[in-house]
Image (cartoon, rainbow, N blue to C red; front, side, top):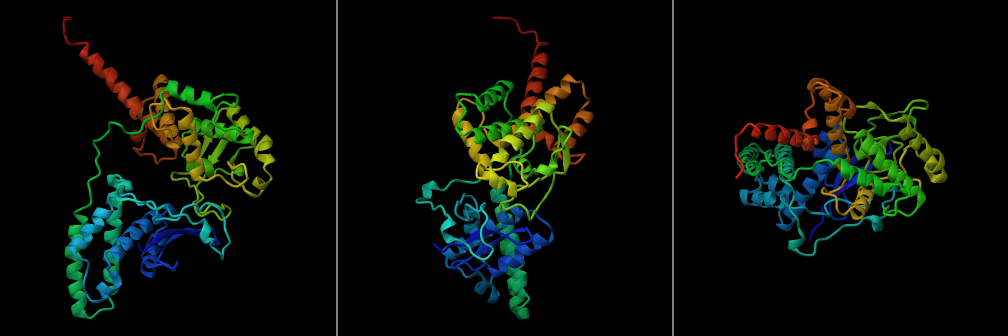
Length: 418
């Protein structure tokens, strides 16, 4: 099958970008033009890559159907409704080789080692998994917007009659295509991600202790660093990208504080997939013993890795390079094996849910009003003042309080024992 692949690139000024590579390696010109509007709007690199992957799916499906999109449009004709239906069907499935893998390591500005590009191929149709409704909806919207853009772009070069015909077909077909955008369910709350209970949190901390026989890592540096990662995530509720973006200069020399900063397209960050802060810059205070552990890691563990001296990032691999997002995922995959009995699928983001639920419990114990709690949480998590994001992260606490109130109401019913 003809391969169109979304490829991440890093410019010399540090900017991360994505291009759609056609068979042979050259970028698809019209897609580059389209993605430029996202770049001009200052959209995040990961957002642009998501758009690029949706268009990779579009071009691959058209290639399978032997449809030359530009040739079709130059005739003043648009895609047919059945052809668009095929695209909508394809948008339902996870296609794992639409994007370059193993893209974190730095490489020459002029040379791309093709041996380091891994494309995972599905051997049979039954191996293809479905994506969630939100992803499917985004794909269809991105495809529709691109097709509308391209029809307008090509239409400007056509005669008046061809341009009018293309415009009419475009409007009719895209209306039918956009009608297939699935509704993202907002009422399915059962099974949604929650944080760890206090017992499970303690169990996790026991496993990552440096002297724990259940600790899944053997080397001393890796044990200490991974223990610190878990502790910092639980202590602050920050995202994995925020943790990996912390630089040594973000640590306060004399106070137990650290800064979480937005540094999109930082030139000093060698990672092509750069971990980023999604929320506002903020300063977070931690307990003195946690800060001492951070400085102990820097002075007695990180310092031993000589290559790490070249990089400003706090969290580095045992080879000295800044740790990647995939490495964080691997750490929690190891922990899932070490803690098989946990009732949740353990990820770094579960730590964020856990922090928010502990925050709600502590705010209740301190007698904070709802307004004060909301403002304090938003400040700690980097959310805007009127953000409602907390509802996503406090399901366990809200469910517990709801059950308590419900049971109190039931006590008012006169139900005799049988």
